[in-house]
Image 1 (cartoon, rainbow, N blue to C red):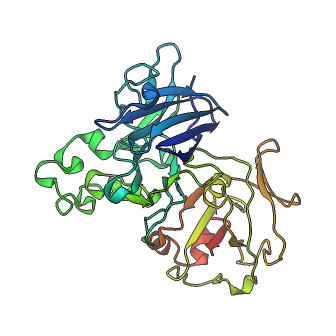
Image 2 (cartoon, helix red, strand yellow):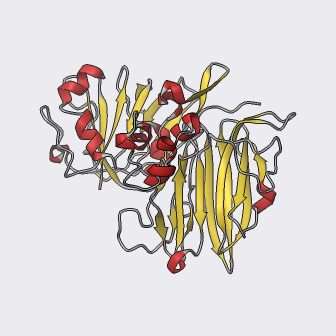
Image 3 (tube, rainbow, N blue to C red):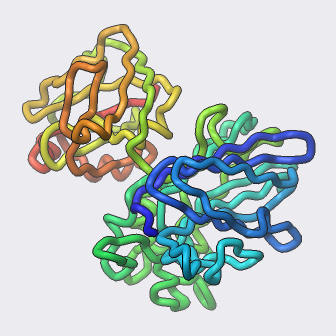
Length: 385
């Protein structure tokens, strides 16, 4: 049985004495075959894998110093045991075998250097479905990547360069890395290119990592571009009592809005400067797209935000300056409509998401509201507080 392109794989971790428990939930899209591989000297948890059906939660226990990787396997045939992405040898339990690229990797190293827990999302082996990681109770030093979310939340498959696509049954099910696709020293950072200075993707014939990095800034995309997120000794995986790394979309959500006067927003026609305030911009091909519900689910759940909506003439479609909190949710049963407080309805159309941490990318792409409105009917700008 196949799996949809967008899946929700929730990942929660709790720490007990000398042990860590990973709670993995498949929240949408059909079955996912979970792959697990321990680093040398570390066990392969659950003998390396298991089937996780839609809506199912499975707990995986690990020593508190465990190191290894998880990855989702998709489009798996229950008869042949072969998976179109992330396959580990036509079997459910990988038993020490790694996954065949492309596949999104979640890498973990507990009690690493200085007793810290390290984690990252890797696209070095390509991408198949979205991944998201966040530590619990970490005590970072305030650095940009310490105890912060790491993930690849964009729909990479639908926007993958044509020469990197893996297609199946009329759709793109994975996006290869340049190294796996072309297997040369330049793209694989081998030989004379085996150093950060020599293997700079900006000097490649085609800057493929620049593409994926623009879509997924909190993941690393090629061998010499790696960065690591650090969590404190008490850190675990997953955002508190809620859900952790995600694969997917269309999830009921609760969104808290911290209300302020709309006039305080830097929302006006003319050149748009985003250096002073991080933004998330949702753009719609037609009609006003209020939000992409999956992104709110795992990026904004429990976080207070301010929001405002612009339409064609740069007037406000919806005034969020009122003081009461709103419950916002995505209802799949009513023709994919977004409901605000059970009153206003806006048809959801095809969309493209730009993430808040790519300020430079936003500045390049959004020169003015006029430019945006020529390409899209409207967009929603959200400022994190």
